[in-house]
Image 1 (cartoon, one colour):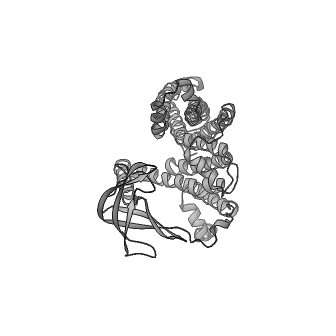
Image 2 (cartoon, helix red, strand yellow; image 1 turned 135 degrees about the horizontal axis):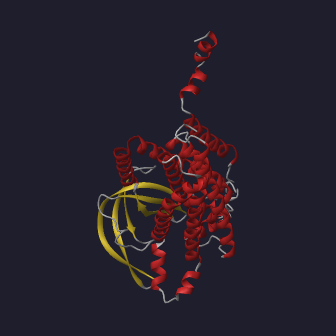
Image 3 (cartoon, rainbow, N blue to C red; image 1 turned 90 degrees about the horizontal axis):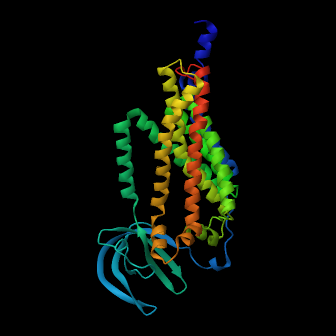
Length: 398
């Protein structure tokens, strides 16, 4: 080693750059850039306080534990009996921690088997101070412990079965959550175009995730290129068919609540289109990586295969992807909208009228646009992989 090399190797910055693999740097830089842009430019407008807020203390949400269910009672609401529970609750957080209160559960919302409380249940309580007194309402159950147990179980299973690949997949999921929570949501709330924010956020999170999981390889390069083209096509289809279908984005209860909240002016049609894009990204990722990997494996198994033969053989594999993944998308969206379908099926409405309802039409457009993007990803990625496999040694790092 000459003196210049020795001097360079002593530089801690250069040593760090040379030690950390290139694909890790891509992941770090991509995430850092997204979060920096979000922090610098995505500033949501502050809601102006209303005149009605003057002199009224804001509601406080605290946790509590059901000590005892004193009685099951009935109240007359609009001359109809409504079941309620008289319960004793111990407040376990907030300014009233340690206090015990007695309240009626079921006054504000109808009780059902799933919303009835039992001794020992942990609940969320809303505490309101009004001019005519203090009021306490049980608004929900505390679900975080159950969610934490499920998350740990999933993480343990992923690592036990997938080992290092499973660990990288968990990190990839973390990147997705970080990109959605730290870039996409702040960008939309800041008043930017929701579709543009979702497309950029999806590309950023897929760039970081793909390079983290699969490394700096030709497979990753090709998969990312195929995904980008397919994502652009999916976005255009979303714009086209939400326009042709006159979908305004009001098909869900949450959308209506956002409008009536009035704190942020949102383009709900853009939110709908952005949701279609984000929902399709995960499936596009799987298809693009699968097609690139299959094409390169075919080339490695038989180096004599030409571009046309590679494309033809990889399309055979791709058709299986299409059949399984489109069904996956359909069932995922159908499962999420099952209560809506049950509601429409219980009404005396014709099939045509049912399909014409905006919330049903949204799910149809969401499913079919996502599936069209998925179908397009197969030939696009196969073409790109075939060209790269012929021109470069795809067994070497990209």
